Length: 350
Ligand SMILES: NC(=[NH2+])NCCC[C@H](N)C(=O)O
Ligand SMILES: [Mn+2]
Ligand SMILES: [Mn+2]
Image 1: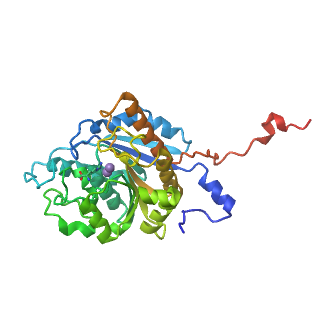
Image 2: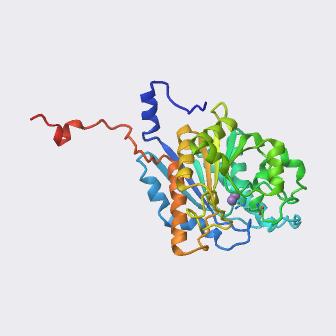
Image 3: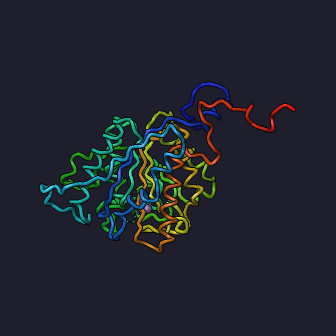
């Protein structure tokens, strides 16, 4: 079925490879952006995650983790975009911020790092997927882990919130459904929807459902997670979007994919979602492929809920990120260390 990138050798060698320390270079990018949805607070997501100790925790996974924090993306309003686009709130901000974001993501990946983008709302997926594809010359597939499909166009959206639209802007099959978007010429509808899979869906608008069915989009909703189990679901998703196991994987992880009991501090929480264990399982599976190219962790809103809710949500986000970069619930074998058996006291021979 699904073939992880691995050295040749025995099953034991493969197991060892999967559960040992692996050189991992990470570039962290914060996007304190909230204009893709109406609630205040989500712009503080990146700093809430950093302040909870993200970098130290990542560094503690093992010694071969190399982390560089590139800080937060800042952008200036592109004055030439005076045109607004119907039913896209704060369009000018969306276009300007994602332009900077795409360039930053492209640069971080070209620096040889896996780009970890901390949101901010999910409209930033426009820039991160675009930058990833530019850096990898198109050879990218996307796993969109979300309660929502984020597949509305400005004609189908009932909210006008652009965080409900990024996938529709990225998909080449939907390019004819958009009007000309001033200031977005850098953004090509870069990816075929055949290279995209959803996991976690449970709040899908009518037109989004129509598009998913018409285009035959790979979509594993909560029902499929129940029917097959998360392990089979991730393997099937990767098999569909990356059958030859050679693409760079982009995971866009909306924290609202998790059940609202696990991640209450988010703008559009939906009950009945993934457990934290399932979220972690998804990222462990992606890590094992060795082909994670970029990950977004979006929609953490520290202004929603109690202090305890915020803490739980941020911790959940960090668990999911840790799994993506090699933290193993089984424990890791130090790659170079030989077992110092002679030093175990119970093994001395008398
Ligand atoms: N990234 C998100 N949380 N998106 C929620 C989208 C909700 C709804 N489908 C809309 O278009 O407004
Ligand atoms: Mn969502
Ligand atoms: Mn989303």
